[in-house]
Amino acid sequence: MRVIVYIVLMICSVHLFGQEAFNNLEKETEKLFQKEGFNYQDADCDKLLIDSKSYFFKKSPITYFKGYTRVFDEQEVLVVMIPFLPGNKGYNITWVLKKERLYIQNISLIENNGKFERTSKGEIIEKPYKKLKKEEIKKRIEKFTNSKFNKEGLLPAKWVNGEFGLITIKLDNSKKYNNSYGEYLEKNQKHYKMIFKKGKLKLMLLAKKG
Image (cartoon, rainbow, N blue to C red; front, side):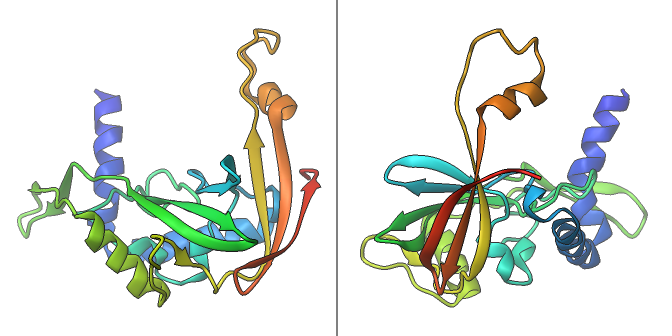
């Protein structure tokens, strides 16, 4: 029973706490990033493709813009406030690097199965989930970033500047880690640093965590 209540609280948290909850989520994420620096990592990392190889941004470049948690509303995506999930925005972006330039390739929504609201009588009611078409999703991102998808279906990320952390994880199904997830990551995770200027890659190098 406790598990069910906990899940409901997570789903309802965005809708019951209102707009300030979104603002606080972004502020808390930034605060954690400033504290942890290169060790920071989003709860659900955006993917970056380089020559068909997958990397993961520790901090999504979309967080450069304030309001990244509100590109889509609570009837369209699920953004969980309880517990605090750093970088949680209700959608994931697939980025791609082509000819040293960074682009958005795809946006995947974390779909909300229903919107929960509190009535004037204090009752919690559910409203149906609103499904967005792919073109509408792209239009939202275009408006938010003030950039357009090109004929190749890629959106230039010219706003991206500075240093970004990346990780890769090598799949290893052996049993030599004694069921320790931390040990598994230590042995199979690699960290990189990337430096961009106006969306163009200037430097990429292997780095150490910590």
